[in-house]
Image 1 (cartoon, rainbow, N blue to C red):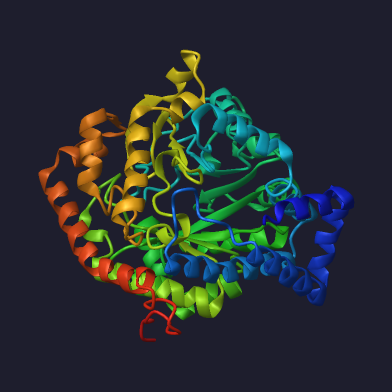
Image 2 (cartoon, one colour; image 1 turned 30 degrees about the vertical axis):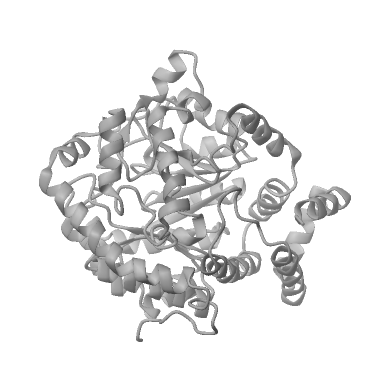
Length: 496
């Protein structure tokens, strides 16, 4: 049984504005808020989301999803209890509840896509409209550079519009370069946010350009949340990002708190900072003292400027991270999503717009459409697609992306180990075979060099094999074996 019809009827009866008022009321009444959230959680848990057709979830995967739900509900409590602006509260109610869960328009668009292609459209889109950045971080996947490399405003506007009208999207991620450095035809990122109040935007940013006026505008718009990048404490962040960047990031957080804008943090785990960013002190500082509501955890990937395999977390560190992040989730109930170690939450790899929905595509400043932010190989330019009369649907239907989606389905159903879901990092040989078959273009010179570097390929293959040797027994013990995961024993947690 789905809870959506129940929620839809309730919202239709209550009315959107009344829902907004109720949401605001929850912010001021802790007992009422907890009663509401506990009731909602019981409804959702009583109607467990079924596995996608043809994709049975192992018992351990179901357990992971149940455990992560506690972090989601705790984050909802934190959102409602924070001093957020009324436009933010309105958009939380209207977009995230009244939009995603109840509106019929989105379902109609998805049904039309399904009728045409036999599957669901992507679940979200990542867009990097400009390469310009005020920083030059070591190993940046974007190799951020000149302002000249950017999409014009009309193209950005069309991409967002088609994401809504062709795919039914209500969530778009903006990356860069630095998104707030993007300008075209007198327009910037916040102009796109303002024009699309029915979409909620997540923006990855270094935070340096966030001043009082910009914070106030974000609060007035109410449909954008910045995820501010930090690498660890001051010395670690400034080492990679530049002197003074850490303090400026904290200043941005203070301005966002004052304005009532929800924000999170974006972390990049390297071989050198893993223990630091997972420490209790670090988690306490950013989630409790600074007021971050969520965290996105990336693993350093050897692509982009000055790529090197030496900064990747070792296979042993990655296993430690898997254990540690679940400790944080289970004990602290903090929303900290690890894009590689949480393949069990996403049903594996999300790249290339995945055939059963939930996946995404990535479009960069030069119009290159790639399967993933970290797979810098593109079979097409969105500007050429538009010039030839095509749409985002034609992009999604490209053979290179189809090949990746077919690989995803085969791997999940036949080979398993969702602890190793990534096609470029965990299955690099398979990605090279698909690249050789479909011949997408590298999106920059660094990607071309990596593709032609035999030492790079050898190093990635060796990493894949080493991590598989460590993670496969964990997958079998804690996810597959009937008594391995649900025998009353938690997976081993790292020593404190």
